[in-house]
Length: 124
Image 1 (cartoon, rainbow, N blue to C red):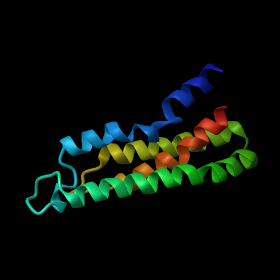
Image 2 (cartoon, rainbow, N blue to C red; image 1 turned 135 degrees about the vertical axis):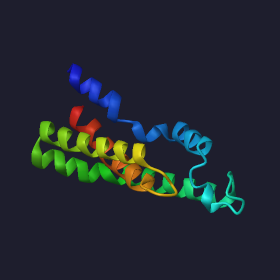
Image 3 (tube, rainbow, N blue to C red; image 1 turned 60 degrees about the vertical axis):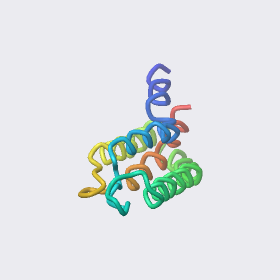
Image 4 (tube, rainbow, N blue to C red; image 1 turned 90 degrees about the horizontal axis):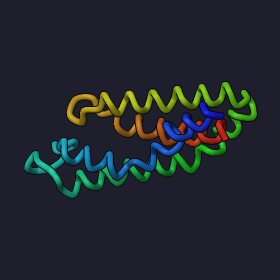
């Protein structure tokens, strides 16, 4: 019970931390190369941020079906392990993200939002 509560706390709702992550990305001038002056914020930069949020939140909603099938096929222990690995990989990609050289923010957010509900469903 304690490990299930911990897993839900750590990985179940990471996707909903986007506003805090957005502030961090803006303070680091991520995607500033999209701006005409090379310094943000600008419309193209904001549009990309909104697009990343839209795609990843849609994946979050759609992933419940896939992770539910995974849960039925593999059982809760294996499903929780697979989904946690997906969330950890997404977190690693976001940690390594650099918009000008290694742009992996969208894949990282998709992994987190796709596997996060699976962690929650497998543990509850």
